[in-house]
Structures are given as structure tokens and as C-alpha cells.
Length: 201
Image (tube, rainbow, N blue to C red; front, side):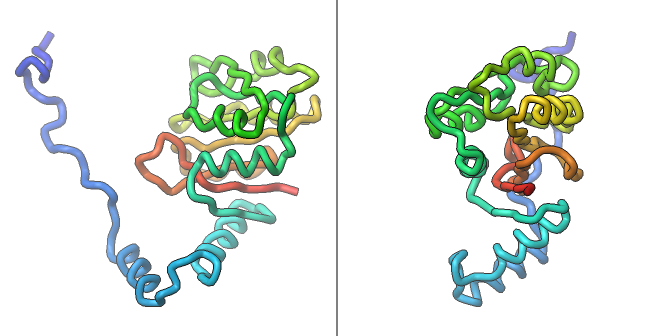
């Protein structure tokens, strides 16, 4: 075995890592336009609203709300679902801490359930076994390019009359036909593409 780089061996990455954040003239112009407008806040501005409408349309949603981060997106979702004290929310045991903390913030109990070793996403059979009369929602987290089994989780949620929330972790495609709530982010270094609350009615 070759000597590890930490012990003086050859580094596996000889080129270094890309600079961050990455942007080009389009982002530079968009930022300059906002700065020049002197309308930097969401309320009087038009950019956030235009983005919300375009993004919702792209995903076939009636509504879209841009929020500051994934924690806020989860808190908005939990609140919109009316989840509170005494309720339980099933979530994968492999996820960012905000998945559980948003549930705790509402006074409800997060119920961690193991993930499938093939996808690192919530195991639908184990999720079903964890459902109690207090369960109000299932949170599916799509991890590392692997979508959770939304067919099975969607059927389960429908059968049990509970909500299905899903967080998109490093996904680049649409997941539009599943669930009531979907969250995306444009933060390229995040473990979860977060901050987007998508609501189906």
C-alpha cells in the first residue's frame, strides 16, 4: 500500500479544489442590477417573487415560497401541516440535524428510522413499522443522488392518512409527482439542497 499523504506520501488531489462560490458574468450582472436598483429587501423587490413563481411553475406546483435555509423550510412545512405537541414525525436516521430540530421546535417528537443500505434513504418497511396513532408525517430525505422510494412512501402516507414531506439532497431533476411538500436549495456546498418549500393543494 502506498504511503498516506498525511505521512508524506503523494497527495491524491494534485490540482487543488475549485474556488467557491463559483459564478460567471450572468450572476455578476444580476447582483449588480439589484445593487444598482437600491431595492435590496424582499418586500419591495421583485426578484424573489419572480423566482418563486418560475420555480413553482417548473415543478408544477401552485405555490412556492423561498426561505433563508433548510431549517426555515422545514419549520414552515411543519407549521403548515399543523404538527405540534404530542405528534410524531418519522424521519431517516441519516440526515442533517435540522430534519429533527424543526420537528422538536414545533413541540413534536422526531422518530428516527433506519435507512436502506442501497440508497441511504428512509426504508419504507421500517417507516411503516414505526407509525403510531400519533404519527402525523413522514420526512423522506433524498440523499446523494438517490431518491427515496417515493412510490412506497407515498402509498404508505396515503394509506395511513399522514403527510409526506421530502427534502432533496443533491438532486438535479424534478420530483414533482410525489408528496405534499418538497424542499430544494441552490447552495452548492450544502449537504441538502434546501430552502425551498413547495406546497401541493
